[in-house]
Amino acid sequence: REVRHEGDARVFEAEASGLERDLLESFRSVEQRLGAPLIPSAPFRPFDESAIGSVSSVYPLNLFDPTIPHPKETLKAIADRFIDGRGFFHPIIHSGYNAYLTLQVAHALLNEGEIDDAWRIAASIFRQATSSYTFPEAIHPITGGGAMGDGHHGWATAEVVLFLRDCLLREGKGGIELFAGAAPQLMKKSRNLRITDAHTEYGKMSVSLEFQTDNSFNISFASQFFPKSFPNTIDVFLPWRARKISPSSPHHLIATEDLPRGMKIRFSPDVSTALVWIDG
Image 1 (cartoon, rainbow, N blue to C red):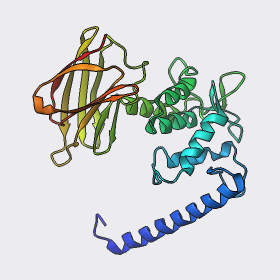
Image 2 (cartoon, rainbow, N blue to C red):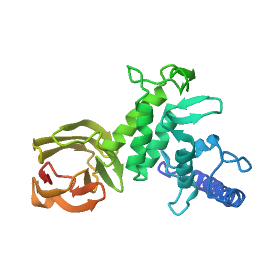
Image 3 (cartoon, rainbow, N blue to C red):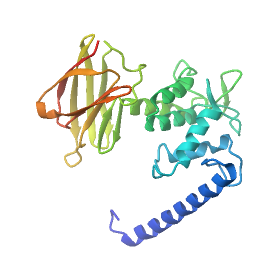
Image 4 (cartoon, rainbow, N blue to C red):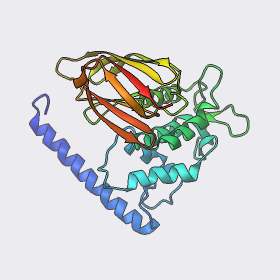
């Protein structure tokens, strides 16, 4: 459609629509058989570790309408049943703890707002990193070395980078979200934090958070957004409550919202700085 091939676009839409209908029919059939809204790796297979493939429908693809419970229930079941203190153990072919699949589950939970569970699962893999912060494709359950695949698995390392990136900066709901998944491991009082030239779908962005005192900090923004692709808002998530916010201009502060984990501050995309005082 973007390149004016309307006929091809209609063909692909029909194929996608038909595949979605088949999937939903399969989901309903399997739910009746299993007694739960879960997605095994094949319609007549028991629910086992091979179901890990369906996590991709939650992250990174976000394929289904939120009213369809099966993908997210599958994610929760995998996290509960097949992940322990060392990660996701894959007994099929891999025969070890898989770093990138564990981090994919953690990232999916991060996107669902389950921050504590996401970090708990991610930490199970972070603890097993080599001195060069790399991983084998599957970690041997006894030796802690490699069980299969590459010795320094690029996919696994990429998942580490992507997880941490989205904890600190991610696109969502027409804007940019900062620090939405930054658990205490990343944000602590008196610890400065800086993001430099982060690439987003809107262009590049830099952010620095510098403490003036234990209970006050200055947050600065420097953006090079594309001329026709500005974000609607910039949301800053804090693990603390802010008692006073002084932005570079009064109209830059749009709204604040108390959250169970702290506070969200919504700024306009043209904000440059804000001084924030937090509860002691």
